Amino acid sequence: MTDPTEPTRSLIEPGASRSEPAASPSEASPARAGRADSPSRRQVRRWQRNLVDERIEAGVYVDLAAKVGGEEREILLALAEAERRHEAHWLELLGDHATNARRGFIRSHLLGFLARHFGGIFVLALAQKAEARAKYDDDLDATAQMAADEHIHEEVVRALAERGRTKLSGTFRAAVFGANDGLVSNLALILGVGAAGVSNQTVLLSGVAGLLAGAMSMGAGEYVSVRSQRELLEASTPSVTAAQRVPDLDVDANELALIYRAHGMSEADAQAQAEDVIANYSSSTRLGPAPDPADFEAHGTAWGAAISSFCFFASGALIPILPYLFGMTGLAAVVVATVLVGLALSLTGAAVGLLSGSPPLRRAVRQVLIGFGAAGVTYALGALFGVATG
Image (cartoon, rainbow, N blue to C red; front, top):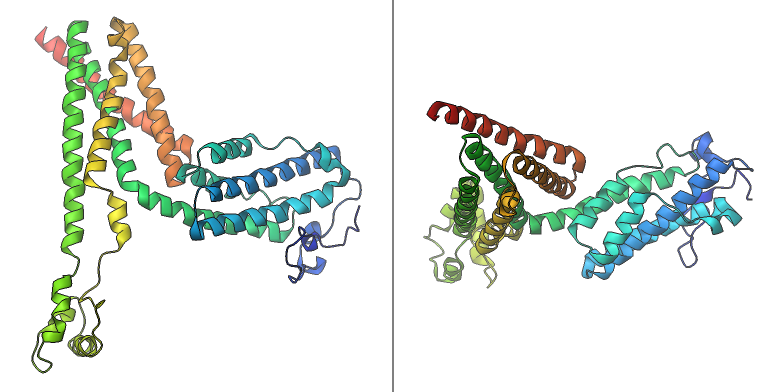
């Protein structure tokens, strides 16, 4: 065992830089500055879990780095290196007890499995949630630097995840909304039609018709929506041809300054900008700010959004009619359809929660309550209509 007053921050893995000064006990809180010479069994188990967690988290970042390149790879490998620094701290505390460290937190093992086999934005979102736990804030056996590292890691992973969310958001939004609309609208449809007292065959035909009509409508609507958004962005992009004609302008009489005034510049600033553009013209000169390429990525492609909406609406709308397709009738079919839709809504809600960084369970519950609320209202209206026409 080391001296209790020796700062554990100075323990770093082989090959790492040793130029960083270690925090002295006076700079840390008294509780963080030292530890018991004879740790309790509970302490040892906690240290072992922390050790395993740090190893898993380092592996997660290494596995994610293997699936990407460039700067993102370097950032992920740097995070893995930081987790190994934390691992060295727990190894030093555990001593001989480190050999028995096998069990970590279940969520860490799950994260490691997903990183090895899948990777991508959802694993980054899960990693962000894991870093947000701030597990060392109240751990007196962790250093203050380790606790601070965890908060910084959360922000790093958040920024990496944001890149993926921007690229995925357009098509993913269409897919999730399509699935939810299919689930809720077709469940509401068959419940409403069934409550009116019609035959099971009529309920099934109504569900199939709702699936086809809804999927076509969603696909067409999403195509028009995304295409219109991209056209608006393209219309805001300055003309390359106009920029190419700048050298032909009369230096003493031209309307170039009006462009910058139209963009909000003062008359004096616009005139100065116009003179600068003419004096320093090059082939890369543009006459106004172009839309951010990330805006195009955020909307996705029109066809991608349309196909996603069509397919996911159809897959969502299929679930409520599955019991009727397999010959179930009456109350049993209604109950099974409702349960299946509830499970599907939970999954889509949790997926949105993971992607957005919000609690998955809360989003899942909200999704189910909204879906069942809409279906319940439709069922009640169908029952009233059946009584009125019966």
